[in-house]
View 1 (cartoon, rainbow, N blue to C red):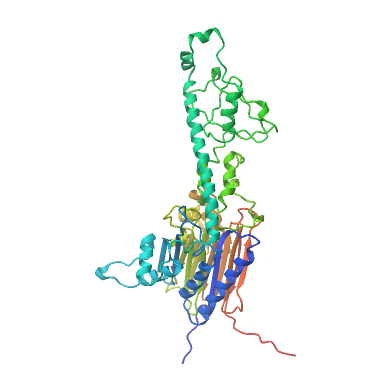
View 2 (cartoon, helix red, strand yellow; view 1 turned 90 degrees about the horizontal axis):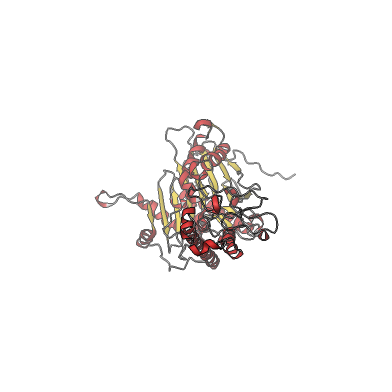
Length: 532
């Protein structure tokens, strides 16, 4: 029987990642072990003639079944305490199957595979089969196609429940703080109505008060109540009195927070003079830390850190004039807990030269029910550029992402990355595309197309991303990965390897891009060990 013609070096390969974010040093071995096992089992499938789609599905299924990953069992819980997962799988033709916010399904990637296969089957009356299903519709589709539908709390792991209880407590604290802020703001607005203009004040003075000085509003009791609340950040719309007779002008004034090391002094003609006894160290926190509002704290999707750490900022301990990028917690390098952002993913190339990719995620913690993440969106969390039949190099590219899902959606991260790697280009000055190497293209994609995108740069949330991209040509398979998070864990294995190559990539400079890669080719000659 004639042997099959080899193409693209005819090397099979599997590449997996278990998410970007911060992987604690205590759990580093566990994360590496998961990637090792996923790559090894996927390669066993490929070596036995399995397709690239088979390898991607089995690799991600293994990661979904491990509690330590944020996919499948043990995923982050929604605000109401349930698990809702996203998943996508794409074959070498670019066809996809995806699910979003699906619950009660043990392996969302398997459901996405069923949707992919069903999308190629024609429906009656020329109806178009779906390639993306969400929520209850996806669960019903799973049941109709023989996929077990589990009890609602079956996927809730003990660790996920504990995180949810902690985050729910932190949210309650933040909500209570917001209520107190609103009450203080309304009280201050009522107080301002009384002293809005000198004319109003003169009208309100009783004739009997003219023979004696009016009672001072600068009493210590008043000072301790109103001003100290502003110091604590309870009132984001506090007063800065600089008008005549100590009264607030009708013209709105832009408040600027004091510089660090300076003392906030209010004129004694103003409403409520500052009591110097409250300033014990010569440095006062800004009186109105509006930059760290309860809205920022509640929007936990902006950070991959625990909410109980962020809530401490409500009390005004984080200066309001601190740059936004410094508001994120950067001391997590010594923590014992993982702060992993979102998605796990895999890319496979089979012995026929076909490429496939997939992603799966449980989403961010305490998310709104029904939220769709990047793992469910083609071109956002996962992308494949198929081979052009007229391309002599037989080039194809796949990319999978992990990071801040909303920013990845804004920038179409996976599609943009795949395009940059496919053409080996980066965006230069004036938006002109320049020809560069693949690793330079990926780095520029993170720095230019992602971090400097107007939707990311102008956001209140810090942009985090991890990229795993694979480019296959007739000369071999090229892996490129990069991330701007604290860490990124991945593994790769080719048919020429005896064991997977596992990497815990760590960036020691916050926000800097760390990257790496490898090349896999079929060896033309095998060197045999000869005994002397």
